[in-house]
Image 1: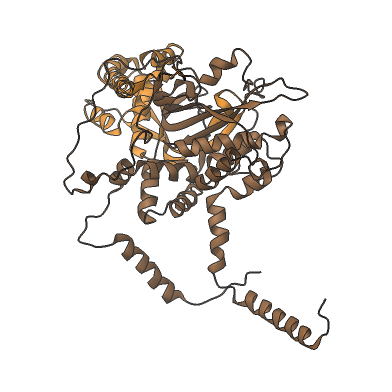
Image 2: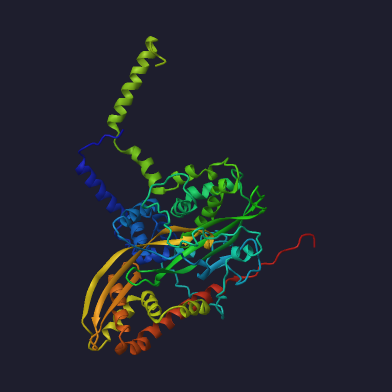
Amino acid sequence: MYVAVKGGEAAIDAAHAQLADLRRGDRSVAALSLDQIRDQMALAVARVMAEGSLYDPDLAALALKQAWGDVAEAIFLVRAYRTTLPRLAATRPLDTARMVVRRRISATFKDLPGGQVLGPTFDYTHRLLDFALAAEDEPLAEPPPPAEAPLDPDMPRVTDILGADGLIEPESDPDADNPDAPVPDLTREPLTFPAGRAMRLQVLARGDEGFLLSLGYSSQRGHGGTHPFAGEIRMGEVEVEIIPEDLGFPVTIGTVTATECQMINQFQGSKTKPPQFTRGYGLVFGFNERKAMAMSLVDRALRAPDLGEPVVAPAQDEEFVLSHADVVEASGFVQHLKLPHYVDFQAELDSVRRMRRAAETGEGADS
Amino acid sequence: MTVAASDLDSDRTDRQRWMRVLALALPDRLEAAWDAVTDPPAVRTLRPPEIGTAMVTARAGGTGARFNLGEMTLTRCAVAIDGADGTTRVGHGHVAGRNRRHAELAAVFDALLQDPAHQDRLERTLIAPLAAEQEAARHETSRRAAASRVDFFTMVRGD
């Protein structure tokens, strides 16, 4: 039990002042602008938007600046700000097949309609520190020359191409006849089990990247293995539409950058399903490829009961995964331990003393 | 991305088309266009610019069950403008982000574009150039991506 304490206001004010002072750092060094963070720390911004569960690059940049670059703290700030905003609309489902693709690769098919596009990837870099970037007057490199022609605008999802022969399980809308059926929403209803796939995907999309990465890794190492292949990864801009109540027709409100991963997995078949490839799905705000891949691995692992597979590993355990995936909850519960627990601890201390006395006198040691 | 954009345009009404262009436009461009309106009409605010969120939905696997991906910031505004023909036209602005002025200007131009007295000129001087720039930007993004298009060769073992 936590019992509140009073006092310490002056010390807390002084602590906050130190926090602000050290955040700013050496005054002879120029302060970071939000534009700089948004444009030059774009992957940190993407992570804050994904796990903060709020797409707004400027807000994410502000949160990172305020949090000294601590991503988990920045996510907390964004989540807290979100609660102050009214919900004005729900969008139509993003159509990732219409993405303006900046990166699109498949590890399973080398020749696919629309082609493979590496885009701005760290893959194939040598991971050698580039000391040219340390030079204060880093020369402004010209953007690399574009190709003569743009990409084929027809970039079908790999899973849609293969789905045609039934070798991959189809992914169809269970509410096709009822497009207004409510979608479970973690921000408005508590997490209960079994959660179902829609709720799971929401939790995973805003879940902690490190936690999901390790769980996905554990499934690859054999703890609930799913024999995954990266069927397709794509990143780019997707238009977002809402249907305002006043208008009754769809209008585009803007675009979001998103990363999608379609993991395809060998499946031996069951009593009700033939051997075929099954699917795990990852979709994340921003350029966030590691997270999208981890999400797709964990999504597939969590589908074990639906596919008649035994649940034997942590990555397949829905309650375990979903209850521990949120970085704000995890960070809060771990960190609350450092707040004053004086009354609590005093009670525990009394209890330990009583037990020791009992043990010394040989009385009631079992009680 | 020419084809994707025109595909979308084909099943859009004129109003959906210009609302999209206004939402995707940089606010500064709309401000400049508003400054250029000679004899600007009186704008009545029906709903002042309001910042909130839209819950972004997506589908499992791209085609399956709907789920909530996360929210995005959204600003909306509604205005009314009385035309010279005596008709009052209501304009709506719904724009991603938190720029109140963007939502307001999008609403103002949505109202003006519904007025035959303004429509042709605004289509010609504002919407068409913005649409062309937005299309050119998508085209440029796609050309840059295309520069890293790759052909992998499978090495056959034992040769």
